[in-house]
Amino acid sequence: MLLDVALRDYDLKSVPEFARRAETIGYDCIWTSETQHDPFLPLGVAATATSKIKLVTSIAVAFPRSPMITAYTAWDLQKASAGRFILGLGSQVRAHNQRRFSVKFESPGPKLREVVLALRAIWDCWQNGTHLRFKGKFYNFDLMTPFFNPGPIAHPTVPVFVAGVNRYMYRMAGEVCDGLHVHPFHTAKYLHEYVHPAVNEGLQTSGRSRRNFQYATSVFVIVGDTERERAENTEAIRQQIAFYASTRTYAPVLEAHGWEAISPELHQKSLDGDWKAMSRLITDEMIDEVAVSGTYEIIVQKLRQRYEGLLDRVSLYQPYELMVDEERLRKVVIKFN
Image 1 (cartoon, rainbow, N blue to C red):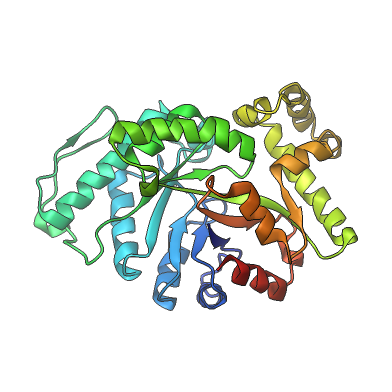
Image 2: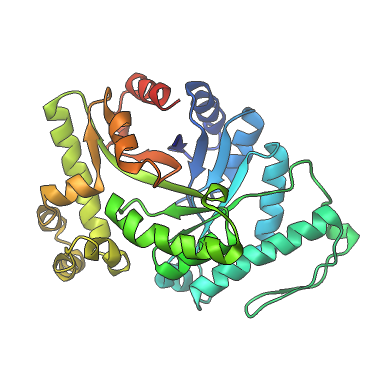
């Protein structure tokens, strides 16, 4: 199991220092997300400031960009990083597609599958000179003249991960992708009984084995060397779990443990803006299943005990991370390696 780190400051001037420090400490990969900033630009800066650490979007929103635009960006990042780039894509939800990005939201699973297949067709055209002729339900690409063709690169295989929260996405990931970004709101039971079986169906369809696939996620961790520190961090985790559990999209995680009755109440309180009452509905039992808790000395051991065989790469999801001591985290990274 590999330990990754999420970019914290998206100011492009600060990215080189962060990337070099992450590489020196020993993280395997830097993750960027598409929330308040573009996820690709920081990785372009990081690619030229480092030589070993991998770089991944976790995730870039797929549908507001034409697959052709995404293909160009990924190709350039793969070249600049000498093969260290991983393209992570997600569909986002209807409201954000329609109201924030002003694009159509239609059959997100099949459409995202088509995005992945289109990307592969475009990259094959550039690398091997094949004729570009991709025809699908949502996208058609059949024009690529030499003037617009960037040509082959030294590391043409760009791994593609997708994010998903339902069985179709999991099966699709196993069939046509190189990895899956599992949502941070999950449990080991959910991974074992819901996620892995669906991905395995996709892997079997494509004739691939588990060795050809990676599971990645941010894991909720409550880490601290004193009871007081862990207690304070637990409340931050409790609030974040309440936020995710109030969203109906993540109901399968609750259902895996028989917690589905709490979902309507959480959702209503979220509409009312009663965030404190929401967190009080999250029991210690739920926290124990969703988050991994321990001291800096034992947290790696506890992560491995819970996720060995279920996850391949993780980052530490800490809503309280600005209070975290970098030196103690450095020890955690060393234990992972």
